[in-house]
Image 1 (cartoon, rainbow, N blue to C red):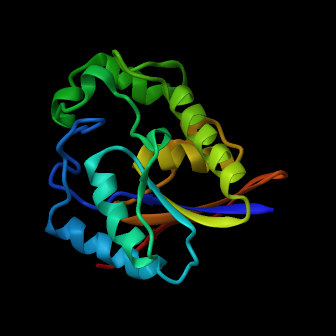
Image 2: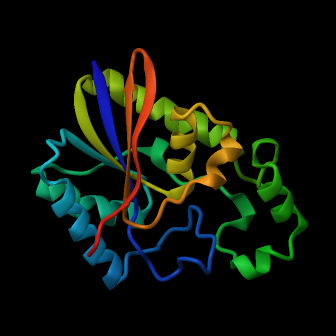
Length: 199
């Protein structure tokens, strides 16, 4: 018995590449992101999806909505899919963060470094893998869509490939992309990484 997870990064918003949004509220998809969400819905419509889950953040829920609607479902919020808690770094521009020596330390050794007031990537990885295992037990043989965030998806991919969490930097997970992971009693495997869906 296996469960297939389509790991979808939320679609584009206006802060991409400029701000470490983290768990900031009020970040919504722009027009480009809304078009990407509709394209994702078309791409996943034929996959026989049994359920759609999303991070609590608006950008993930707005991406999940069209996907769920196309499958005749309602997207459910799953806290385990939330973005990494970056603590006091949330909402800061990347330009400002480059002047913070703690930011450089975190990027050089994320597995042993904690964002100020936030969570380590080991804690984030354990949280999301727990969520996937809970879904596997609840749904069994099924295909599920999980809408989350780039770093969270990278941590799942690293886990499935048997890599250290710091290997997350070796993956590209673009906005509105799909990666696929299969979990079973035997373990985990990756079926796809960073499939980009044109709007």
